[in-house]
Each structure stands twice: as structure tokens, then as C-alpha cells.
Amino acid sequence: MQSRVKWVEGMTFLGQSDSGHSVVMDGNGGEKAPSPMELVLMAAGGCSSVDVVDGLKSAAQQVVSCEAALTSQRRDEAPRYFTAVNVHFTVTGHQLDSKIVERVVADSLEKYCSVCLMLGKGVEMTHSIEVIEA
Image (cartoon, rainbow, N blue to C red):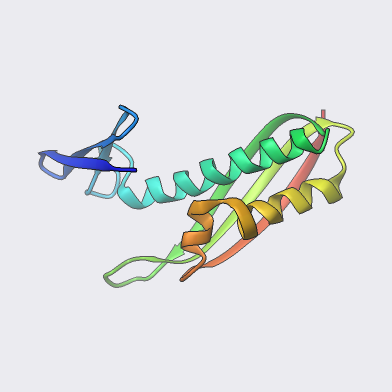
């Protein structure tokens, strides 16, 4: 896997993926586009959401909606890396088994999600869930 990042102007950068997609990044804390650190959080949420939806479907759960809300803490001084991240999943479906939802979410963050596992090497990763009957 490869990517490239090109400086556009000011503190705006264009990231290009191997698969041909592009994303704008803003080094000014998100004035014009997501900041690189915001994209890291979105990547963690996206990666784990894929695992959760796939895992719930594989467990024959009737999931109709899944949302991951990520909150983080960062160091105050440079480098301002994350020190803690919580991923809160709100999963909506028909007759969902909350024990299965909890297991699938935990497995994503502890076994399968590449982004969360990388972050977890130096960041306190936690999770929580909310199950809603549709």
C-alpha cells in the first residue's frame, strides 16, 4: 500500500491513495478541511465500523444502523499525539443481542481493526456501546 501527499497552498495538502482516491487535509487545525489528526480518528472509526457491521451480519444480527462516535485526548505540547481514544458505538437493529454487540465491538478493537491496534500501541483505547431497538 502506498500514498502520496502534495502541498497545495498555505497549510492545505492533498492526499492521494493507491486506489485513486483523494482527500484534502488542513494543517491549520481544520479551517478548510479535516486535519491529519482528525483523519486518524475517522480512519479508526471507519476501520472498526467495517468490522462491527461485518461481525454483526456474520452473527445473524439484524443491524440497520451503526455509528461510531470517537472522542480523544491529546498532549498539550508538541508532538500533540493522542493519549486516549474512546470509540462509542450506537447500533440499531431488530432484536439485537447486546452481548453479541459487545463481543463484536471488543473483538474489532482488540483483534481486527488495524488502525485501532496501531493506535493502541501507545494510546489508551476504550470502547462503549448503546443498543437501540429499531
